[in-house]
Length: 124
Length: 514
Image (tube, rainbow over all chains, first blue to last red; front, side, top):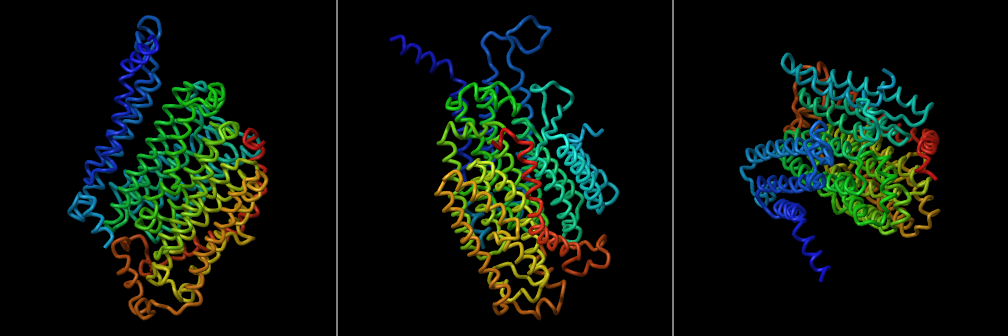
């Protein structure tokens, strides 16, 4: 009985992680399955967002203060993942920019964003 | 000044990369000279660093003076030193090649220097998250460089590379997250101790290992994850394919080795045999599948790209065997492969310019048409197969001896089979080059000289005559030929440097070699 309650507790209290898994799944699925190049890039972004959420969740601690030393005593939330994710977001934005630039070029050359059509043109 | 060497090595190319962009306001032909000056500086710093590592052993640098393990650490030991020197040397070679072969735009040289920044950073960093950042800098610069080809297919290849590469890097980042959750630190040395304390068989540690190694395998282009590589190598300009084939996967393989030996350590591999076997299986499949795919290619550049898949399988197999001699062998093969593969791509570029041949059928009888490039190509190909005086032999031999010592007989069998398969595709090409009737008529390329090769490469070769002076008319410059010949000579001469490298590795990596 108690074991069941614990399990249920575990299920309801870890919703962040479900969101992470869901985002990773949706992102990867879109990335692989969508024939549209722009949607692929969006899938890539969703996938990365899942990872960002994972890091932020790692840093979370119930009842902890923001990591600003002057504001009362600890416990503090770990500041490290936030710093890492800021960097990772910058990387993600640059990747999206480069990907979109390439897509613009592909569209102007081949006149399509559809992967299957592109495949036919590409392997001529 | 001298104590800041490791960080200067990374900062110099960043500064160098921004200068051509500013210079573009005044002239669009200054990129090359700026890149050369920067890379000469890089080489000088690398040389000074080599001297320090040789005399004092491992060099550690705390960036910004933040106390370790909280700050970012840069570490240079024997393994990273070898790779840093390789980056300097190959970059200078590629610049000599690009002087004539182009692209000539300033932005190209900015990207090239950014790529050098990323590669150097990956090599010297001692921090797993920093490794991710430099991995992405390398990636971003490489995607841009691949797309710098004139043909539209270059953009498609670059987008494919970007998507696959980003997934790889993201998986690595997720792995870093797991490792951070397990240990609470990002410093490699600190993490390796804490991972041992957490227990190597804990789910967190195993997941971190799987994700990090899986992510890096995409970048190394091991077999099922290699799909980006042939397109990227075959569609980019010659200078770029020579550069990225020589360095990008090489440095990723180095990062994988760094992860195996400095973070997870050999103890992890012995404690979790499944992880080690997984690596060995992936590497072995890569070796066989890469060779098999290479044999079936018609285009020479695609064949070389698939050959990389197989050779990196060999390197990773050497690291996974993890006996001292196998690790030395894998490092030797890593460095040797970079020199040989870069040289081979440069040689295909020259042969294509002089004769228009790009396929194995087209190479028939071209040995007489481009004697120097073809003979350098043959020497490099033989080195890749592992014919004795060449460095390819020493690397393979050491890995083989290591595998025999560790009694990993399946690996031994795969290694021997791979040599035969490598011989299969290079011997066929050698036979075509020297003993077959030409299929491409000479008149065409002689009659209108440069024009002909222009016609064939029109879209990938912008011919701005401004800075090239006299030899703007010729398809191939002395510099380009010199690069290929030097690569061929190095492929043999580097064998002499193996004992020094071995000594350096055993002295600076005691926890690795034991």
